Length: 131
Image (cartoon, rainbow, N blue to C red; front, side):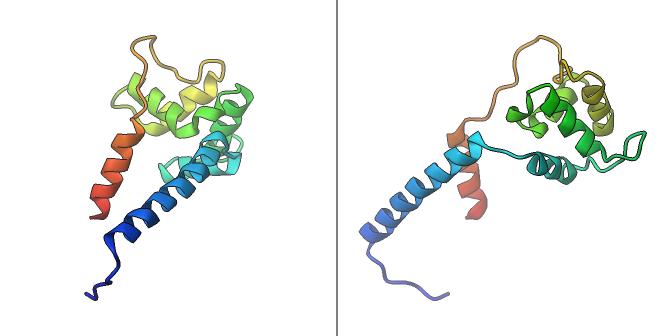
């Protein structure tokens, strides 16, 4: 593999600048999501069936979450909550539960809240996966 001869200080500075740029972009992404993105995430997670009238389940779920004004947390988050509340169940059953009860999309018991992974842990795992 070819080696670049770049001063370590310049590499460190480039990494700082990249982090600053990425931080701003990530902050924007964290504040914005779209229905299309949330539907795509559900499809990537395997939610690909159709409802009673032929509408895709991913569409139905995202629409219910949007109508309940809780889509800002992300459809995957709500799916995870529903799966945690009923371990061993099929993800499609979790989707049906969420769609049936849009007023309480978590479908979870009022036990301890599901913690969001700290950003530092995610960054560390991402770095280790790349190396």
